[in-house]
Image (tube, rainbow, N blue to C red; front, side, top):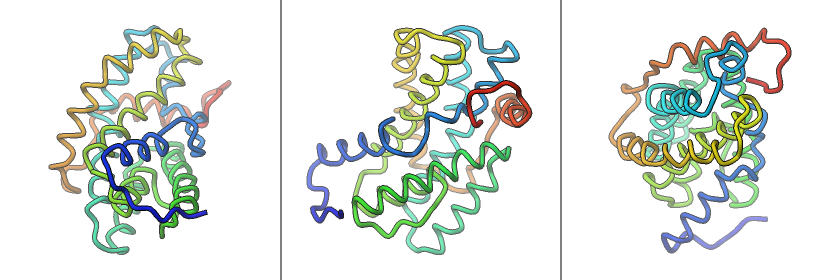
Amino acid sequence: MATDAPMTTATDARLTLAQWLSPAYPTGGFAWSHGLETEVAEGRVTDGESFAVWLADILEHGLARADAVLLAEAWRAGSADEIAALDAEARAFAPSAERQAETVEQGAAFARTTAAVWGLDLPPLAHPVAVGRAAALTGLPLCDTLALYLHAVAASLASAAQRLVPLGQTEAQGAVARLAPLCARLADDAQALARDDLSSAAWAADIAAMRHETLQPRLFRS
C-alpha cells in the first residue's frame, strides 16, 4: 500500500523518521553488533564506561561518521547514476565482509519496506544511502534525518551491549542519553561534508570487526 500524502509539517517528518529508524522497522538491526562482540570477548569493553567510550569513537571517528557523509550525499544526489556511485563507494568503504553485509542487508530490507509503504522508486542500497535517498524523495529535512540516523546507530549498539557486556537497561540508556548531544553535533557537521571527506580513524574497531569473522562462539552476525 502506497501513501499519497506528502510531508506537510515538521511533525509529519519527525514521525516518519522515527518509524524508519525505530528498532521495530524490519531491517534486522538486532542481528548485528558492528564488531562489539569481539571487543567484549577480548576484554576491551567490559562495563558501561568502556562501552560509552567505544560508542563515542564509532560515532565521531568510525564508520558512523562515514555513514553520515554518505547519507548526506545521497540526500543531495540528483540522479540515479550518482546514487549508484555512492552505493558502490559505501560497499567499498566497509572494512570487512561482515560490516559490508551489515550495511548492504539492512539497506536492502529498509529499501524494500519503504518503497512498498511510501510508493518510492528505491532500489536495494547500502543502509545510509537508502535512508538518504528515501528522505530526499519524501521531502524530509537532512539535519533531522542525520541526527535520528546517528541516534538509531547508538541505540542499536546499546541494545547489543545489553546482551554482550552485559549492561542493565538503565545503564545502556544512560550511555545513549549522554551521547545524544554528540549525535546532534555530528549531524550538523555532516551537512557540510562531501565524498572527499569520507574517512574512518577507528582502526581498533575496524580490526575487531574483521576478527569477528572467526570468533567462536558468537551471538551476532558482525
